Length: 80
Image 1 (cartoon, helix red, strand yellow):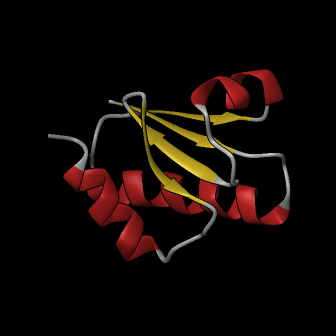
Image 2: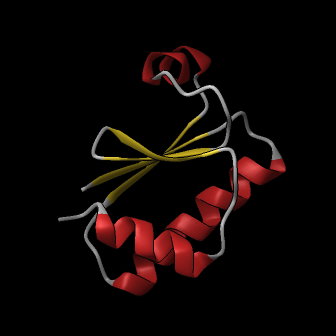
């Protein structure tokens, strides 16, 4: 599984990345986690609102930083 957090480097983007890392660790999933700040790569995904969470190439969350339980749920739902 490949999980990407797309962000500009702002505090909200960094928080989503840290919460996602914690969610992956706590879930015991094997995942490649990447924090993408390259604006060209972000534009290529079509995302307009940051931060964004992308799982296996699919944008699953944009514009908010949910709590860790919501992130775990999103990861679980998209890991099938």
